[in-house]
Amino acid sequence: MKNVILGTALLLGCFSFAQEAHLNIKIEGIQSEKGKILYTIFSDKSGFPSDVDKAIEKGLAPIKNGEADIDLDLPNGDYAVMVFHDEDDDNKLKTNWFGMPKEGVGNSNNHKGIPSFKKSIISLSQDKTIKINLFYL
Image 1 (cartoon, rainbow, N blue to C red):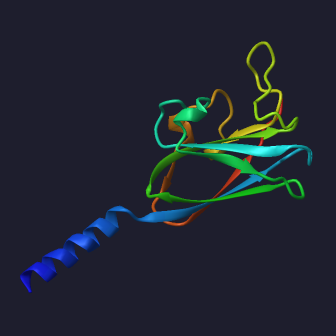
Image 2 (image 1 turned 90 degrees about the horizontal axis):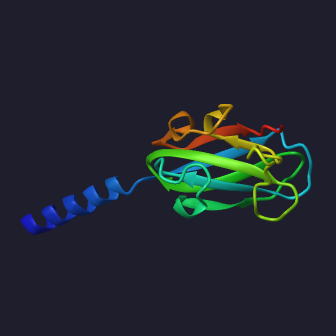
């Protein structure tokens, strides 16, 4: 009986550490229906914002009626989200010779300027919806 109780306690303990929450990301301010929205999710500052190989999640979302929705289930934790409007459908962020984006970009917390992981962090411990407004130069 002691082993059954111990086993059950261990199983429940493992379950509590592996909890996930649903993250819904609403992308607004999209200037055209051309192309798609590409997104990356980072769990730490390593690689943020542009090294997609270090992102824990990445993907695309279609544009419908000037908006896009992304739905993910992630383990509880801190994350930073980057999105951009891939208008020309080439799977790359087009930039000018200064490195400034020529396509719409946005991040969690909607801060302007050079993206920083610290300024973009959202904490996920329960289901959450965030809105990201795209910024075009």
